[in-house]
Length: 247
Image 1: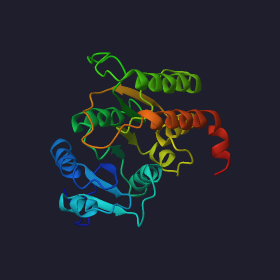
Image 2 (image 1 turned 60 degrees about the vertical axis):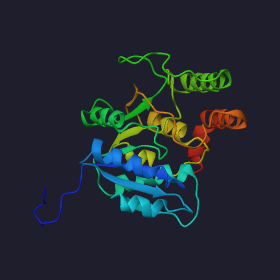
Image 3 (image 1 turned 30 degrees about the vertical axis):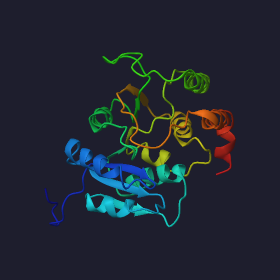
Image 4 (image 1 turned 45 degrees about the vertical axis):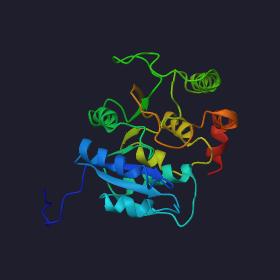
């Protein structure tokens, strides 16, 4: 479809993917996006990769924004939302580059924000309901403890249950993108984003979804990483207002 100027009309939706050294996983993720959301643009945030991540993304039809060095996930996430807002998209989605987020589930989240049911929809592997088995994921005892602590902290801070605060499967509308696109100051950007959205009075829905096992990499809720993440999230919950005053 062409605009009045003869230029192709901009897509309504962009899906961004933070990626660092993901040349092996990206082809399948990008092909799935092309098949499941054919009308969406795709933006890969290349976080200073030292492999062929950027070239692979371009070869599969994605736009690429590359950092000159590895800047970390919190910068990649903020950049994705900021680019979606500055480029004028009505809606954006986020999926991870490791292949664990089915595009069919992201499409459900985008349908919710398009229908104005909420400003942000977050896919949760632990939320019950909507025809999904409550115990469809069976984490180890140590991981259950970490997840339980995160959930308890979110309930206290938000005044509502939140089952999967670290989920990277997200859909957002144009009202939410600028809020989520400001650089993050904590090591738990997804949790900080929830605090910001709550403070801004925006509507967030946690939606039960299925997720696949990650194609590569390691969960943040294992071993010492689990302890560090729980401490980081606790600090984000406790000091959110102070961190925002420092901006």
